[in-house]
Image 1 (cartoon, helix red, strand yellow):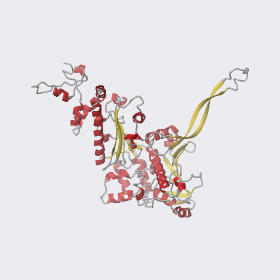
Image 2 (tube, one colour):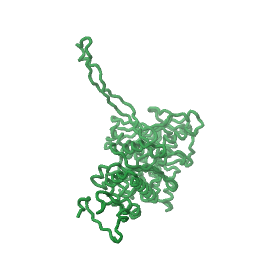
Image 3 (tube, one colour):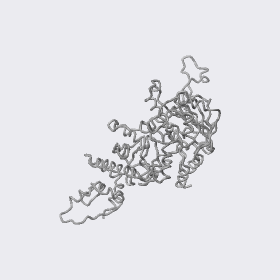
Image 4 (tube, rainbow, N blue to C red):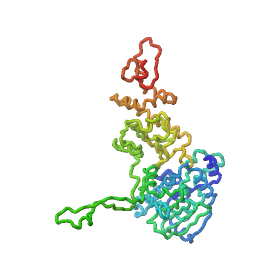
Amino acid sequence: MKFSTAVSLLLASATAVGAFVAPSASSRNMMMPSRQFSSRSSAPLAMSDSAVVDAETVSDGETFEFQAEVGRVMDIIINSLYSNRDVFLRELVSNAADACDKKRFLSITSDDGAAASLAKPSIQIKSDKDAMTITIEDSGVGMTKSELMNNLGRIAQSGTKKFLEALGEGSADVNLIGQFGVGFYSAYLVADKVEVVTKSMQPGSPQLRWTSDASNSYTIAEDSSEPIDGSGTRLILHLKDDALEYLETNKLEELLQHYSEFVEFPISVWKENTEYKQVPDDEANKDLSEGEEPKMKTVPETTEGYEQMNTNKPIWLRPPSEVTEEEYRDFYQSAFRASYDEPMAHTHFSLEGQIECKSILYIPGMLPFELSRDMFDEDSRNIRLYVKRVFINDKFEDIVPRWLKFIRGVVDSQDLPLNVSREILQKSKVLSIINKRLVRKSLDMIRDIEGDEDDSKYIMFWNNFGKYLKVGVIEDSRNKDDIIPLLRFFSSKSGDEYTSLDQYVEGMKENQKSIYYVTADGKAKARM
């Protein structure tokens, strides 16, 4: 099914889907993450006694029908919206982080001293090969029965519904669709059954279990499995037969490092570690003489437990004055797998006003290996895009012109015009503004290197990346005049030294009317 067809069906079904949290409109602008994946209820963002009512109305195994053809939407999501099902973990971890963020917010604003002293929420992930399940558990705000029904089973009074209504009236900006994700239901990319065990932060809330196999109904019942400590949500994915690779701890670690390494809350994976230790060899020491050194042997010792995955810090969110040169270098080498390269220059900046964006850009110290084979290698990932610390993609071609393919960096903005699955960056005014600023900042870095007292630095830059600037003069008419002064050439008078076009013009003979040039692959081949 084509993506456009899928979106049409999605809009026609007029549904919103849920995540693990449901912040109100009043709280949406206060310390809450920008990832609006869920249907948002209109209930006040506060702890109340409403959970007691929920407890009274929960019976054993109530079955409810999905409203507004949610089952049909799940089918669209599973078969059309996502091009890579690896992203299920990104979506579910991001939802868990939303729940943790809401709990932190409620704890800070609560009049209850005990709530304010709660430990920092966290996220834990564990696979079970025997049961063929993955469990993602957060110690976030949790959900009541009514929130389970509103967020996971029907359209709530949410921004998504209003957007769809406006779209039907022809008054909505279609690009806004990227603000309304479908995160929770991405679980069905890899699972044929999903269970959500949850306990709300609200006083007196029971522990509940929501269950669905992606059909037209779901059940809610009180849960008697392992109690959730305090509040939170435990998501249990029963994997499909063709998704068993996700039971491997190494696979989960790989996806978390790729997508969620900068999520604010601790993310831990249950894993088995084997260490080797020296112990006395009883067999070999049977006939050991007095005073003789005992013989040792090496034995494996296996331990199990949770290990935190996201230990790196997103330095782009800090003020530049608080980041050291060593931190900039370490981040570059870690984020871009460039352990043996020191960046030649970097710039750290923010956009505010019409859009909000934070970014760090680097000029590498050497030409990246993949670009040495093909200067426009499609597999080269130069700009990494994030939305509130969560990695989205690094394959967007329009974020910078291709003559800046050698620039490395990160861009973090909640204003990025993404499609419903957040995998495709759509053309928009926002993208144009970000593109212009990235080009400006890149040119500023290059000028700073050119203006350095040490001329060898720009010679090194030119030898590595000069060919990209030549492409820029040809392809980028908007910035052509800014690139031209940065070009370097050999001339008949410069010998082995480079000259700029301005320097050449200054040295022209009084009656010289023309400039002749020879193009070749290197100076030696250009000699006549």
